[in-house]
Length: 76
Image (tube, rainbow, N blue to C red; front, side, top):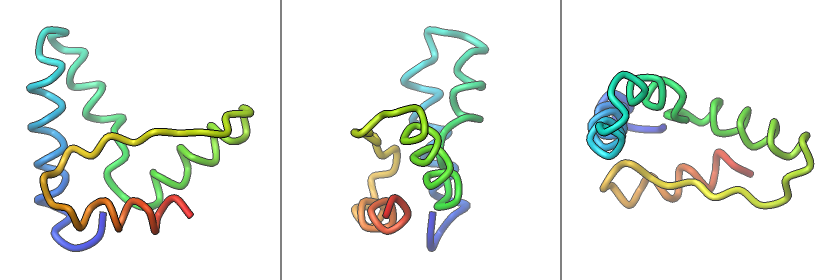
């Protein structure tokens, strides 16, 4: 999301692949499905809201604190 998008995608891929490595190839599917841009965050939030969910928790995969602000902007 936002500035440094390529680095942020690399951060997410590295973090998620490491965390889910015990699942083997499934880790790649998790990485592919992760919200890595504002439009995907909005789509996921709208989809869950449409299913009746009224609370959604995102877990950042980047150590950059700016990503929290970008996530908040995208989710509004």
